[in-house]
Each structure stands twice: as C-alpha cells, then as structure tokens.
Length: 230
Ligand SMILES: Nc1ncnc2c1ncn2[C@@H]1O[C@H](COP(=O)(O)OP(=O)(O)OP(=O)(O)O)[C@@H](O)[C@H]1O
Image (cartoon, rainbow, N blue to C red):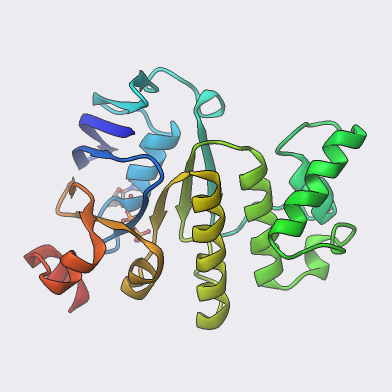
C-alpha cells in the first residue's frame, strides 16, 4: 500500500497537501488543472522533493528519508530520457548495470524486456533510428526491468498521436497488472484515465484528493473535476 500521511510539500508560495492510501496493484490517474501540483505530487513520492510535513510510506516502510535511488520506485517521463549515443538494448540495460559489458544472463533479461514491449530485433538501433512510440517502448522496457513495485508516469506519452498513446497506455496497464505494480500516472486527458485507471487522484486547489473509483467519479464529478472538464 502506498500511504501519503498528512503530507505537505511545495515550491515558494505553492503548497500541496495529501492524506490518503492507494492499494497495491492499483492504477491511479493523476488529473487536474495545469499548475495544480501533479508533478509536485510525483516528485515527493519519487524523492526528488522533500515534504515539509508528513510522510510517504510503502508497505508500512517510511520512504521519506530515502534518496530517490533507494526507493522502490521507477519513473517514466515525457521525454523518455533515453541516451542518444546508446542503442535501445544499452538504454534498457541501464536498469540492471551501469557497465557497458553485460553478463549473458543480463543480456537475456534485456532481450526479454524488449520482447515484452514488442521490440524484439530492435535492440541494436539508437533512439534516433526509432519512432516516438518505439522510443516510449524502450523507456517502458527500462522502467519495467527495474522491477520496482511503484511505477510513476509523468505524461510519458503526451507527444504521441491518440492511437499510439492508447496503445502505450494499454501496454503499461497490461504489464503493470502482470507485474502487480502500483501505478501513479499523470495525464491531461480524462479519456486516458477512463481507459486504464482504476482510480483518479484529482489534484486541484492545493490538494491531492484521495483516489476515487474512475467510473463513479466521472458519473458524478465533484466541482473541481467539473471545472477541469469544462
Ligand atoms: N522548481 C520550481 N520552483 C518554483 N515553483 C515551482 C517549481 N516547480 C513547480 N513550481 C510551481 O508549483 C506549482 C505546481 O506545479 P506542478 O508542476 O506540480 O503542476 P502540474 O499540475 O504538474 O502542472 P502541469 O499540468 O502544467 O504540468 C505551480 O504553481 C508551479 O509554478
């Protein structure tokens, strides 16, 4: 279970509070107006931003004092953060080791990860030789290979067209469910939430609301969601 306990964090005058839990294995979309604090929320869970008050816990363990790399968290950003001079396979392998030379077992795991995101045979290509969607798949393979129970996505597919984005979301949901990963996914698109998310965390007016079941929330949107949907 992910637990945000009386959390308060922010930048300058901006404050975001959160006080809720998310059950393991759930996929939650993080939705709300621009500047509302969605990235701030993810940054606190990932450990890039320290809260001023409160704690972040995973399965009862306090993550708050831990550096990002020591947390059970994998993250996927919009620009994918692929290294342009490395091949797809080498980019994925960074999840396992900083060394360029892999053991046969590591090479096998990289191949398997590329296979799972539909990129078998693409391992030798550099990012520039891949489409945007394929680059997203490489980044996803790398995130999955980290085998962290919490997966944070900050608008990772917003540069893709609607069909490709839908495909990537389905792939994330399928793989996350297969791994039992718990997902927090920032998106601007309500249809993304309805497509794959069990729950929605509405972030507005300085508050990240508790995850609410997706369909029930859209069937009867609270004022903050109604304002956001327009
Ligand atoms: N590094 C920073 N320094 C100062 N203020 C910041 C910083 N990062 C974010 N902010 C401010 O914090 C608030 C929340 O920003 P945040 O990026 O979390 O919002 P968001 O909901 O992710 O927005 P968007 O949908 O536009 O990406 C905004 O008012 C923003 O200007």
